Length: 141
Image (cartoon, rainbow, N blue to C red; front, top):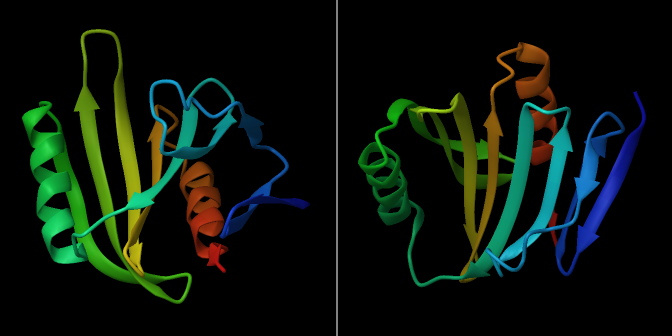
């Protein structure tokens, strides 16, 4: 499968040609640097902004935010991906209109936070594998 390259500022990553780069919603989220979609069921947002926090503190914040929104944490770990330390979180959120999974990787490097957040109602392992490959290709320059 062919890969495309996304680059914005110091952030670059590869993504499969089955994913589409959408217009980033910088009106509602000024920190959004990329939005990708795959079909109707998968939306990946990438945000970056300065932060004084560290991975330990942010992990607890993320877990609390999802639980406060009525979500359930299915997995929350510290991992190494793309040659960097990260948080990997998998949760499930139910709303009156839709139930979806949220998969998130968080990196904090040199005072900046980088968040890759996939919201998906597609529970195929292929989509999650592609998402993991996208995040694995992350380069911060």
